[in-house]
Length: 400
Image (cartoon, rainbow, N blue to C red; front, side):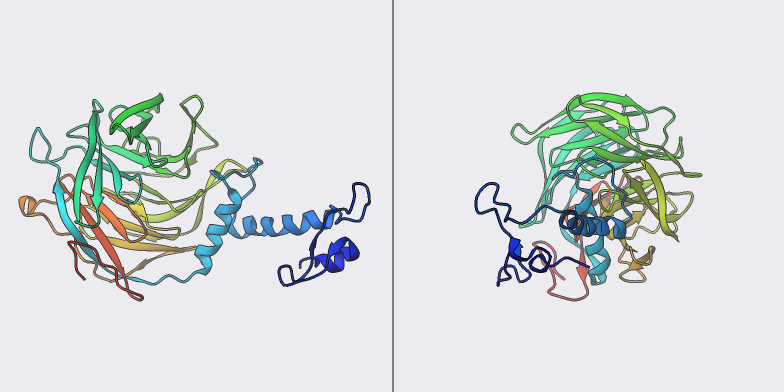
């Protein structure tokens, strides 16, 4: 139901016209004339009813804070509804774009103790690994199909099994197994320099951590030591991290991966449970809960996830060595694989032929293109998923 202003307010509303076919509000002719459109409970409830329906359909509880441009629960509700209602074509295959960029470990033959990637925008990624222990920025040129490093490297001593999450176009959240500290690093686009901002937060007992950014201040966190899904919030004024809300126990977590589908929902998988799941954070109750059913997915080695959009995640792990896409249906609350039954394997570079992938990392540059790297192959590679309908995509260095 919805009120019709011309019927509801009569002469105190502007009659229907082409711009407002059901009538519109009007001001008083003079102050105190009491002939303008009144501000009534029906008027306010008509608007509130619409916005509350958005939240109800998305399963979002109001958190008590007013919406802002950077943190809008109504916008998240609208995105969730669009994702449920908009049919998306299936993926067909993955094609490498351009040339890979070799990132050798300076002390040996492979990147060590895992790799981590986070997309800062549609061309730039933050990268770190446990061998070089350097936080770096790499940029992909879609015209030439070439990756290049941008700016200088920042030494992050003792890095081992790291994970990154992009908070915005310059800032990343970082934590690793060895240091056990949640930190923020910022890339200065003008000088090309990385620097830590704010204070570090020690998180005890961690093993094999994973992060995903829900927005510019909040990250989902899970690891194989505490076996808990948590939310940490960055106070941008003080630069301090703190846990926000309650933890959710998740049994037997090992080698986890997270990817944020929107401002409340994260995809989760790990190497022990072998299940792809969706978890939702309710900002009203400040609690995590699983949404819908789990999907059994074999993970023989460390898995990696990247959100392509609000329903689809790219997935790879170190045994099958194949990029796969999984989709969450918000209406049925189920996961399913889309695309080919036998996905196109990610090829080994010649220098690493015969060695299994370990410590894989993947990040989405946009809704079709992902960047991939692993600790054995040392190649920073770009892959594109082709839609089965519509106009085929194309890019320099890759034809399909």
